[in-house]
Each structure stands twice: as C-alpha cells, then as structure tokens.
Image (cartoon, rainbow, N blue to C red; front, top):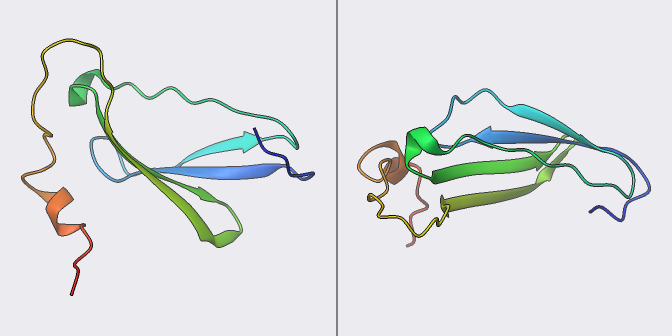
Length: 90
C-alpha cells in the first residue's frame, strides 16, 4: 500500500523467464494493486524488477522461486543470461 498522496504507475519488467515487454500497473493514491504472473512454465521461478515511472532512481529487484512444497528443479536461467546480468564485485 502506498502512503503517497499521488497515484503511481509502476513498470514490471521481466529479467528472465517471461517476455521482456514491461507490464504497467497503476496504483491510486493511498491504494494498492496486485499482479499475478503465471509461474508454471518456469517451474515456479521468477526474476523481475519494478520501477516507478518518472523516477529512474527507484527500482526494486525480485528473484526466487515460489515454494509449493513439491519437488522442484534448479533455476533454469542460471546456466545462461542470468549469469551475464549479475553484478561483479572488485
């Protein structure tokens, strides 16, 4: 829930698993919004960033796996593009 007095437009950007086309989500002032992503094709794995339109310095990155209690697979994006997008220390 936002405590701001102005509405926000968020851009949800897939970093892996989903098409890279940003999804826009509007949040009314002092309101909330929800977005459901289909995780079946990625075995429950997700990797996306959320940015506030008009505020380039504000971004949050979410990555992981939706835990269901069922047997799972290793991160399917770990072998390819996900490694290239990691930050390098040093």
